[in-house]
Each structure stands twice: as C-alpha cells, then as structure tokens.
Amino acid sequence: MVKRERVVRMSVEQPLWRALTGYRVLTAVYAILLFVFERDKFERPWIAVAFLAFLALWTAATLPRVANAASCTKRFLVADLTVAVAGILLTPLADEQAQQVDGPTLPTIWAAGSVLAFAIKGGWRWAALASTFVAVANLVERAHPSRDTLHNVLLVWIASIAIGYIVEVARASERILARALEIEAATRERERLARDIHDSVLQVLAMVQRRGTALGGEAAELGRMAGEQEVALRTLVSSGLVPTARAAHDAGPGGAAFLRTAAGASGADAGVQEPCDLRSLLAPYTGSKVTFAEPGAPVLLAPAAASELAAAVGAALDNVGRHAGADARAWILVEDDPDEVIVTVRDDGPGIPEGRLAQAEGEGRLGVALSIRGRLRDLGGTAELISVPGQGTEVELRVPRGKAER
Image (cartoon, rainbow, N blue to C red; front, side):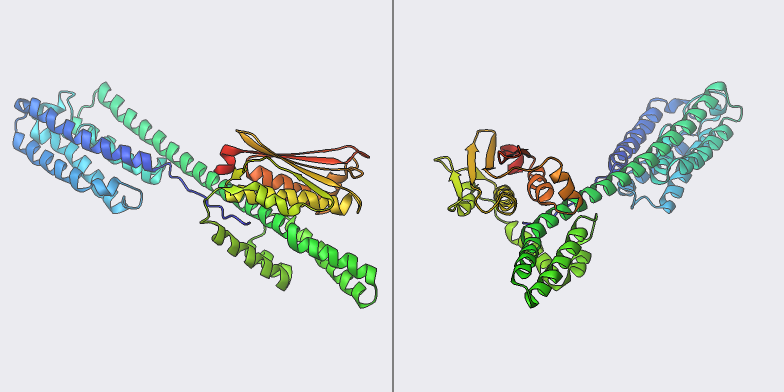
C-alpha cells in the first residue's frame, strides 16, 4: 500500500503580525488616555484632539493591513510611517513647551509600531530606514535634544534593526525546515514505492530469469532480458530521490502500470478506518512448510498498520523460500501484548552468512532493508534479525500500538 505524505508548512511570521496588531491598538489607546489626563498642559488642545481622533480611526481601519505580510503593502507602510512622523512634528504646535521639556509626543510609542511593521515586512534594512525617519522627526521636534531624547532614539533604532534581523533569520530557518520536510516526505515515498516494487515486479522478473535459464532456447533469451530489466529497476529504486512520474517512465510499460496501480490503491485505502484483525492477513501464508501460531482473540490494528506488518511477514517468508532451501520450514508466531504487537518469523535454514545483508544492500537487493525494516520503521516499530550460520534465521517484528494507530 502506498501512502501519500503531506508537508505542512508553518509560518513563523504570523505570531509577529498578531502581536503587532495588538500593539497598535494598545498604544493608540495609551496615547489618547495620556492626552486626556494631561490636556491642561496643551496650549492648542484642538490640534491634539484632531490628530488623536484621526489616529484612532486610522488604527481601527488599518488593522486588516497588519494581519499578514500580503496585506501589509509598501504603499501602506509609507502612509503609516507618514502618520507617525506627522504626529511627532505636530507636537510642538499643540504644546509649545514640548521642545523644552522631555515630554511624550502626540503618538507616543505608537510610532514604534510603524517601524516594527517595516521590520517584520522587509527585515533589518527596512527597519533601519523607517527608524531613521522617526529619529530625525524626534530630533527636529525637540529642537534641542537632551540625553534622554538621544537615548530613546538610539533604543528604537537598535531594537527595530534587531527585530528585523531576527525575522530574516526566522524566514531562512522556515525555508530550510520546509525543504527538509519535503525531502523526508519524498524519501519515505520512494522507500514505500521501492518496497512494493520489490514485493511484486522484481520478484516476477527474478522468477522469469530463473525459469528461462532452466528451460533454455528462446526462454533463455527472455530470461536474460528479464534479468537485465531487474538490474535496471533495482538500480532505479536504490539510486536516490526519483519522482514517481520519472520512475514510471524509466521503468517501462510494465513498471509504469504497476506505479499507477500502486498510486491508485492509496486513494482506495485512505477511507478505511475500522480496525483489522492481523490474523486474517497472516493466515493465507500457512502451508505445508509454514506453521502459524496465533492468539485465541483477534489481534486488532489499524488497516494500514496491519497491511504493512503482513507485507513485512510476507517479505520475510519470501526470503526463506529463496535463500533457506526448498526443504526449509518456517514458523510464524503472533503475540498480542497490551502495548505492542510482536510477530516472529523463524526458519530452520542454513542462516545468513556474516556480511551478506550489507553486500546485498550494496547490490541493490533491498528486501530486508526496505520490505522489512523500512516498513516497521514507518510504523514506529522495529525489526530485529537474528541469524546463526547452520541454525536458521529469526526475524522479530515489533509494532507499538499507539504509533501504529496513528
């Protein structure tokens, strides 16, 4: 069964935009309350009232603009910064003493929100540009800036550049993570495809090669061609990340038909959710040389997990038939524990020589690596192979219930 992987992209910017939205609302309310409590200090309070009324309307109307990066356009950023700078420069007109006293400007800390919008949208360079305009406006408004004024200007400038730099780093990290997730999903898809090919197409080609060689004549030529296609397909499967469409093209008509069939099977199986009895999937393997020992109660697993586990057992039995000899016997034992399901496949064959598995994997024969261990790894389980020359081979497959259900 072929599953489809989906890479879920996450946004590290969205929380920043939400925080900026809240910041603009709170600072606008703060600027209005500050004027209400200190309105007696203004020589021309009507200027402050007019600007703060406009500021409240502007903040409310532009909340959708600071909801995400797409809505926050360059034109809006310029207009927003203009409002902040205009408010700073209007402060001496409303309060003539503002140039002599280090008091707050009309927009107060709301102006920093405009600079933060530049930082989140365009990074540290945009933040440096916007904070420079705000700094110049503050210096002009003070006429004779004090140490506190210079300190506040420098603080806003450095903080905005730092935030812009952090945003750029976060974006780069997000792109790297998304690419890594895509590669991981593609790798898992390729491994599942390789397992299905190994369990069907490659085995058929190997059988045609053996039978053709044994029959001789024209069948021998057919066997030779099947052997060449088997080698080519094994190389294709084990050569790295190969897109499904390209794999179908390179595999030829038979391989393409198989790939289309496998891809369609995932859609058919996707809607099945009822638990499946593992015993019913393993029972068909029973024969004159295969003994099946099962619990008395159903061994329930998710359909996908049960199918993959049964396919891994089938791959293990196929290895017994091909490598343990015609007279070898095999035993399947199923254990149903509360936390996991354990399936053991044991045979009385000659065993596997030391280093043979690594050699087979290097030759592109991925029966154990993909059809058994790869399947169990995707289920969150483990596959342990124990083989002693002359004493047979035992494959123990463990699937945790929680991970298998997911």
